[in-house]
Length: 196
Ligand code: HEM
Image (cartoon, rainbow, N blue to C red; front, side, top):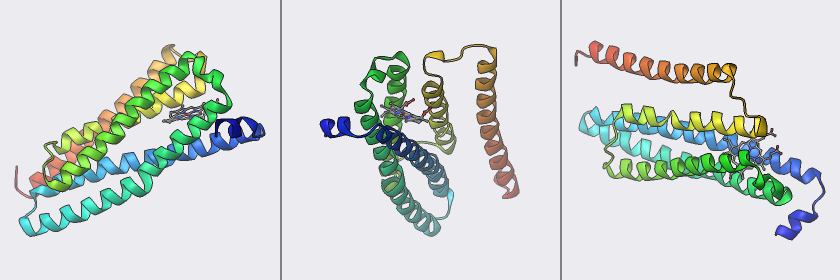
């Protein structure tokens, strides 16, 4: 396999990169929506028992399909194309930005498998996480995405000046605003239903 990749024409590298980026898009689409489904799933526990059972079964089915048909195939495409890229250009591995990137990709893989664990717990009705905790967890892939893309684009010229920190703060501000908006909406909903 390694020998075969080494004998491919130079444009094969661009095909690997194209498929690698498509894999990243699919993987992240799956990761983002999966935890959103977990939030709806956990919040459906407050419904009355008949409705709760039907909603939980439906969410479990949607989660399983999303994870197995979109998220995991996206992850496999990303990682397998990344391996082909590294076989074609093994010198990338000696560069610090790539070693740091691999560290963050490892965290992303841990997140991926944590999602599977949560999905199994939700299906069995044993998940202890609250909606708020799941919302906070859902911000993690965004942070990893920003860092990894910056590493791969800037490589050895990773920016550390004021403008970069401004962009980082802007992203944190946007994530915090989403959290506050979700909390505010929940409070309004409880006020409307008279539960607050
Ligand atoms: C399995 C771990 C991964 C490895 C070994 C890996 C490796 C690579 C390599 C060797 C390149 C080509 C660099 C170049 O030609 O300039 C690349 C490109 C890229 N990777 Fe990854 N990658 C991995 C995971 C990821 C993940 C998880 C993301 C997104 C969060 C990502 C985003 C990108 C992007 C956007 C590019 C295109 C950059 C450009 O052409 O400027 N990679 N990756």
